[in-house]
Amino acid sequence: MKSYQNMVIPKLLGVLLVLEMISGIRFGADGLSMGYYIMSCPFAEQIVRNTVTRALQADPTLAAGLIRMHFHDCFIEGCDGSVLLDSTKDNTAEKDSPANLSLRGFEVIDDAKKKLEQQCPGVVSCADILAMAAKEAVFLAGGPVYMIPNGRKDGTRSRIEDTMNLPAPTLNASELIKMFGQHGFTAREMVALSGAHTVGVARCSSFKNRLSDSVDNLDSIFAKQLSNTCSAGDNAEQPFDSTRNTFDNAYYNGLQKKTGVLTSDQTLFASASTRGIVNGYAFNQAMFFIDFQQAMVKMSMLDPKEGSKGEVRGNCRKIN
Ligand code: HEM
Image (cartoon, rainbow, N blue to C red; front, side, top):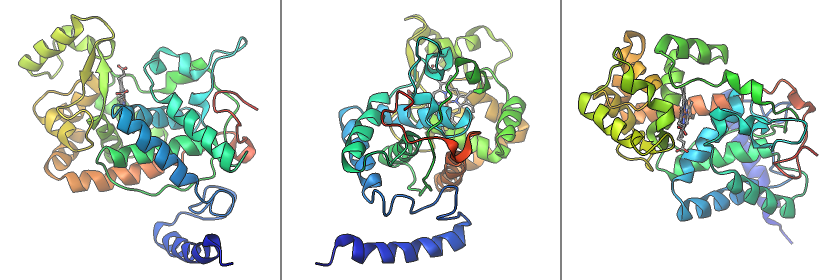
């Protein structure tokens, strides 16, 4: 009997080879590759897609949670699923850091992992599941489609102190440029990645500095809106832009109107070094989408220090 795999796999491999030539991303080497699960778990991507689709149908706000979680994973020791690990009695994990307490969507990753373990036990890493889930979340919220290579391994280190390397919401443009530069990103890529704030919310504790900061660049009516939100307490939520569940360029339009929520958002328009990029994305959503997808692929490939020495966890919350 002609199997689905016999017919489809050679064709896919041909397509991947062409993609390799145009994208420069290697396949089948010791690192990441485009068709990584094509033999070992051909429906991995489909399983993650279905899981994320169902989760977002029930709660569209989870798209933001998944995208942010992937960012927080990759910026600490590379994309190694370290953000997914639970604390143990001997170790306080990244997820229990104040910077991560509002991360959301862990149960979506657990759900996808459970299904993948049934289909192909011990094959698909949690870091890959998170990278794929974030990609689906971007697309399902209305953003660009992009392809990411897979083959990340799950790390065994997750320490609260490492999260000091996450950007604080009070940073200014030159500090952000420097911090993202340390991970190999240009200023333009940093501005594009910040566009992820086109979805989701920030809590009052993340922006209340702006209410007393007289040098901040904040629209006066919007300032009243922010203080109104904060009157409900530190955990009260403020959407980043006017379309909180839709991936579009409204975030950049908001920055032009001085209605960015975080200091680190508004600084991108306030600073002459990044204002032109903000204006470009506000004017041209297609350009934002192209730059965002390229920067996300790059972010998804940030190398764990442990390299290929990591493992494929059976449960994303615990090391094996
Ligand atoms: C440029 C530096 C960045 C800073 C300073 C920053 C900071 C923050 C802060 C403080 C929040 C709100 C957390 C809370 O109050 O609960 C937040 C939310 C969020 N961030 Fe960032 N972020 C940055 C870049 C990014 C990047 C690169 C991505 C993804 C590619 C991202 C994705 C998100 C998303 C989607 C949310 C909303 C989460 C939700 O609604 O659950 N952020 N960010």
